[in-house]
Length: 81
Image (cartoon, rainbow, N blue to C red; front, top):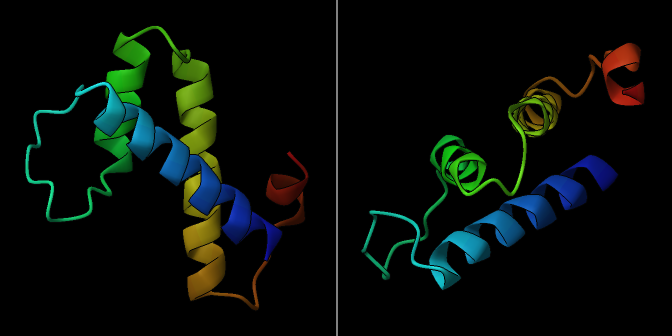
């Protein structure tokens, strides 16, 4: 549950930063924007995070997605990181 909450909070924060600062080329305000890859690339270009941090965020996000799809399989060393 904590992984889901942390990932959702990070996605919300990243999305709000992009929208608030008009950094995305996506202008449709009626639809939620959930392109984490695009958002992270934009934030890296803004020098707000490093490439290393971007990769860590992607790993964490993918871990949460995999956990939701295969909740019976948890890779302990990845979770510990």
